[in-house]
Amino acid sequence: MNFNPVYIKYVAYTVLGVLLLIQLFYLLYYHLRLMRYKVEPVTAQPVMPPVSVIISARNEAENLARFLPLVLAQHYHQFEVVVVNDCSFDASYLLLQQLQATSPHLKVVTVTEHPRFKTGKKFALTMGIKAAAHEHLLFTDADCEPASAQWLMGMASCFAENEQAQIILGYSPYTKTKGFINAFTRFETIKTGMNYLSAALAGNPYMGIGRNLAYTKTLFFSNKGFAAHMHLMAGDDDLFVNHHASANNTVIQIHPDAFTFSETKTSLAAYFRQKKRHMGVGKYYRSSHRRLLSADAISGFLFYLTLILGLAFKLNYWVIAGSYLFRLILQVIVYQNIFKKLRGSDLLWGLPFFDVFYYLYLNLFGMIGAFIKTKQWK
Image (spheres, helix red, strand yellow):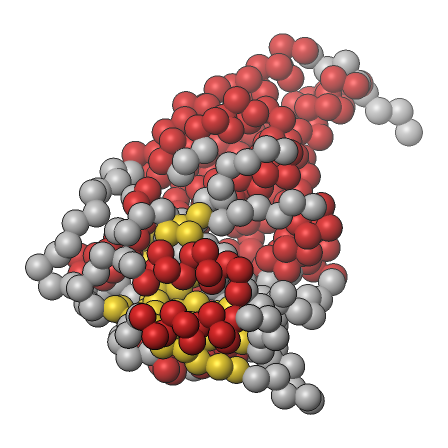
């Protein structure tokens, strides 16, 4: 069978055009909303709810010593900090006892390991939620540093401003250091943040991150907590939000004072374990959200692959270059404002390289997550 070279070229151009349109849809329909979003100052409302901050910590003595005092020192009128000491065998217990002596609003819940029943983070968080005295819950991790003493105020004010709000999606960037892993992790975090924050602004929230997330106790218990996915080690944050967030009950908070910062992994092995755990729960998202995320990941990967094949098979250079540059220029226009809001302006220069690597990463870990089950949360 003979193939007409002209026909093959038309098919290639059509495929490239379709992939470009799909990518532009995410850029202009979703990300443009975050670009235009006005970040309001963190201010106390006339009536602010009391809040329970919940932290699950397993062998986190060093991080608790560094960051828990910053959580306890938040400028807020009424709050408690519930730390779940989850089967730790380091110095966590002694450290928490010492901090309790000087911090009356610190509450410690201790979980011990059963020889025949291995508990995970969801069990620890559930114990913390049951012990919480207040209706409004704010979650972070032991290795997270509040950006300011107004972090709690910033997140809680969203409940006060919106009576329907049951879920507050915060943002948690990574601290800038040296090295490729740090740079790419920060870039990937911004891209992930762009996606879930802009989707929430579009009335289609699908995930949140446990490093900076708030929701109500009523929402948790009325939906039987983590029961629907308790058998999975991961997903205490994104799966819970995916199953229970709606256009009416979800708002975002991205004022820089309301961020929490974390440190990136320093080795490829640790980074691989972390991302495998995170990506392994994607297949349990709502089907509409799986299609939304898959279309972005696959079209982005195929867009770059088609460009490369187009050059290899000597398709029209101006069509190839024009498609690439048109998308890149629009990305820079939209991303510039978003990267500034999410504390990653320095990464914009690496967009041409990082973006290619990002779509390789999405498809690689998407396939790994689909077939490999995570057996531990730490």
